[in-house]
Length: 150
Image (tube, rainbow, N blue to C red; front, side, top):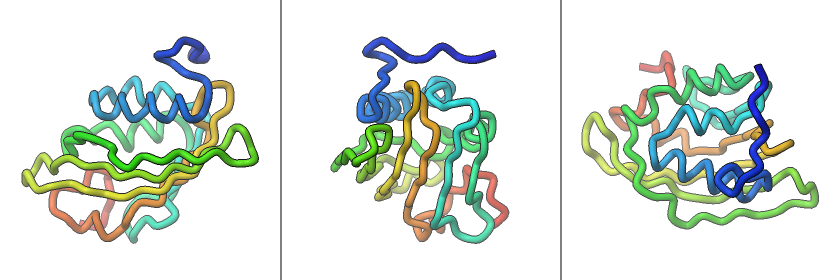
């Protein structure tokens, strides 16, 4: 069953607004609502994924499975240094940001830098290439993605 296309300010259509809304949902730990921002056939890619970690998730259900336990492992507090860049293609943005918080298992600080290339069509994420730091997953408590690296 298709999900309705977002149209209200709380469910924005523009890529920049949708991305900012998605960050609020992550801070609220509302993973089902975050997954609801994805197109049914949306693709999430991790070009720098270390061995044993997923490199590509195809479809909303795969993204949901990947993110399901995220709040049990990472307690996000903020996304400082957020910069969203428009591109020549109106459906594509490039995002630079940091995610900060703590690792739930150890209480250690979490501070990850990201660059993402994001495509939005009809108010849904259709493509999300997440260039996160693969060295950061060596910290205990970060194995939320079902990797077989540990």
